[in-house]
Length: 338
Image (cartoon, rainbow, N blue to C red; front, side, top):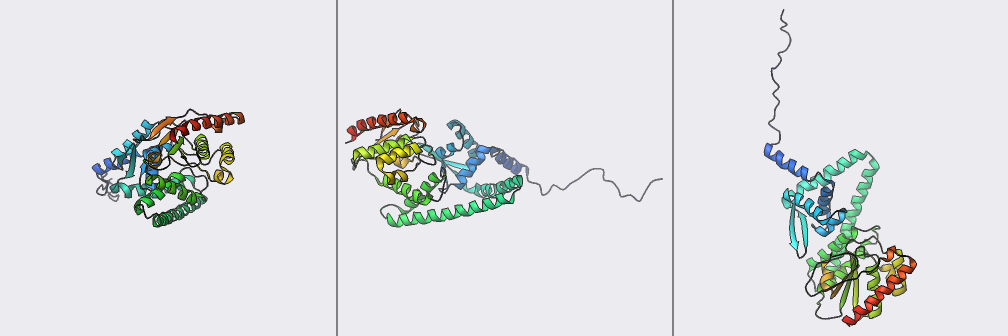
């Protein structure tokens, strides 16, 4: 006997698909997600989005991982091909920024999805509290940097206000990447920004000759060489130093030497600074010390490379020998400038 009380069973399943994402849109979104499905690319995108300047130089992004320059360029090209990034070459460097039409999507990814994914993975409420504290600290630092930029712009009326504020923000961004302790970051930003603004305004055709020493970390030999020049030249030549990948602090052994040369006050005030195009353009001579060809080539600037040992790795006797070697080279350099 046939059971007529049971409900009829449909022969086929026919779910509603009217609200599903369209095929073309799905292909586009999947391509973008595939492009950022790489830890280094995601970090690059985050670094560009978080940069106070609104853009990042390829030389900054290369510091995120120990990979070759072609590898960095490849990852940036993948992100650019998705339409997320725009690039602009200025001199020898290429700068990247988030495309205006992709900013909302990138913000949603980095500000909403990423923190939620990390919180779900860690499952620790204290981590969320730490993240909120860090976010508030960053907002406070941003307010202080903005105030510093406005104060310097009010003081330095001979320069474009927008230029002064931009250099202050760039200086902070350059220092914060390697900062170990942030409580001194605003005074250091002011010192670094003032130096850069002086470089921007400098005319190399007149005034006191200027030398720029560049090493990788700006924590050893470049600091030492600049101090020796300033000691021996007695104002007839000005020396500065910078690093292609600045360390968090000057090496203790080198700071002891700086104390002997400059005195305790100036030695304590020394700190590693990132290399900038402004510093290179302002220099009459650029001396590289174990950092290769990282300096942009500026017409009219003389370049030298000194094969000098690293005092951070040397024995006490070796440090003395390195100092003597640098001092001999400095004497020769000064004869060509004074």
